[in-house]
Length: 184
Image 1 (tube, rainbow, N blue to C red):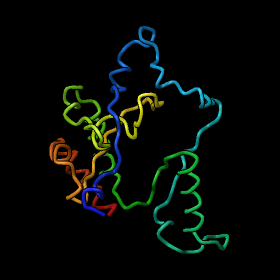
Image 2 (image 1 turned 90 degrees about the vertical axis):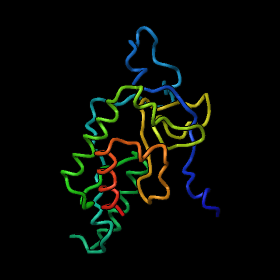
Image 3 (image 1 turned 45 degrees about the horizontal axis):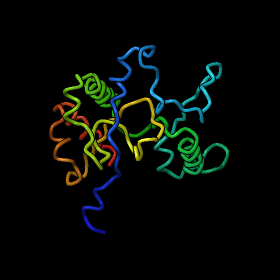
Image 4 (image 1 turned 60 degrees about the vertical axis):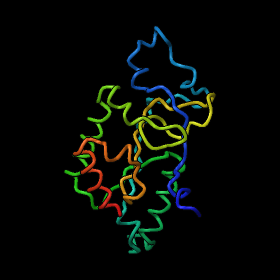
């Protein structure tokens, strides 16, 4: 495989910033049709939702649990179900300090609170997935999620996009590297 193919993580068509759309009164514009999902049921507010929790320590060990099974097998089943049915989960016992997680969270919130003119410096380029925008938008008719993302590769260093990572605010860049080094 060519080296350039390895760095291609996907692509996405540019779309409007959801944060900017949300600033407009909905009664004036209405919800844009691309964000209305009639194929999905509205959330049931009466059912309490329990976010799936995955224990990384249990995934990486093969100790027996109280019922005589393997912790890693049961945890792997939980990971599979969380990924299949939820699409996300909370990861615990990952080795990253709570204070670092809090700093990264504050920096990311700060990034999303930047003025639009600042965030546009990090906008996804055509044919790329990294940057600010939405991921995996492949057609003009595609239904979209009501949310913006910012995605960039921190490590390994040779996969960083030179127009993104080096230009991030220094604390976000530093804390992202610190977090990435724990995960590796």
